[in-house]
Image (cartoon, rainbow, N blue to C red; front, side):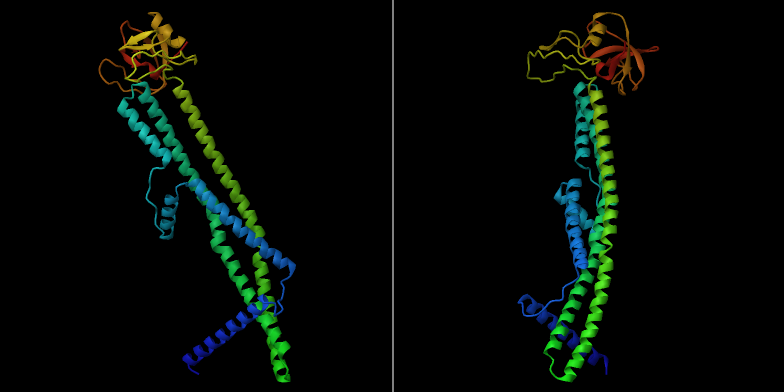
Length: 366
């Protein structure tokens, strides 16, 4: 017998088996044939596996939405992952906002209260963006990947073996039906032998499927560990964000409480701020029609008296010209007021160096 004859016979046998299974399945649905039921334990395992698959898919997909709300970005990442290529690096939303704020603050001038505040806010937003990237990377590695491996690996194997079990059951029930219909002794002997073979194959496949399904409990234990990793990653992320915002709030607390820059206003009288240790503008300074009310007490002390005070520098500052004094964060300098000087500036002194310094960069010390 040549290879072609063998292939033809094999195809004919496969077609016969398929037809037999189709007939058996149809008759079962119509109630015209009996169906071999699986034992209760195996049915429970199958139900547990199916339930695990459904909820794992839902949790995985919604976690992806949580970590990356932009659907277009998710699709792009999916395509690059399937192509086994690295997706191009782009700024995320906090990083992009932070860059805009920094650029705007630089344009307005770091020496101004608003410009400096924008720069500080922008730097914080970029730090939050970095933390967001770390959360996504950690969650993808420790949480999403194990869930996806189960769906695309273990469960696919289970589904394959479950389908084989279904086919073996159909073969078994079809053999039972043929045995019932057999009348001649020779036909009955052949049908009984076929039944013994199909029963053996069904039992063996049921055992294989059962062993695989019992591994679902181990899968749950593994996914529990992955869930703990995900929660820890979120906890770290939110703790970082809270600390960043707390630090930013402290920095902004040292900015002028009564700072107005609307050019179309001719006379404004804002409510005096009562925040402690905040540097404000001078008492009742009138400049270009802008009226500014009483500042916090620590600055008014400097303006009211001609004596000097110590001040801690909050941020680095580069002098714009020879009349200004460059500053380094956390250094302590001497400051004092000069009659006729702009209300947003003080005279600073460090050793034999002297020059104007912006009050928004200072915290007066008692």
